[in-house]
Image (cartoon, rainbow, N blue to C red; front, side, top):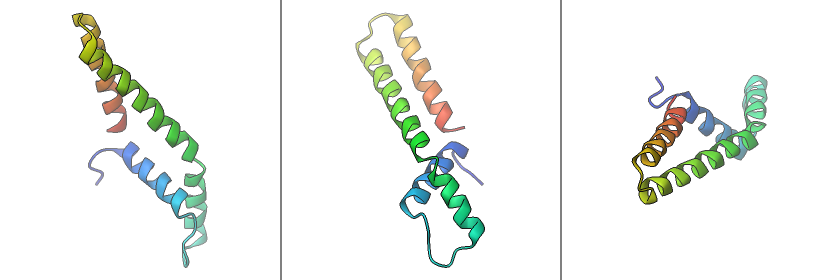
Length: 87
């Protein structure tokens, strides 16, 4: 059972595959899977960076934005990013 969604599990699998590409005694199928996951590393890093930039900008708008529509948009951006990572 996945508690928070598949995206966070995918990110942890990719980061683990990048850090530990080959372990002694694993099957060839698992080695192939780890290689495929390791190839997704740059994609995962970009997802994290873009999400972080959007969250930083949204929190800036939330704190410094005086108009109500700006604050609602900032909350929408935050909700979208959180929803993406928890899917």
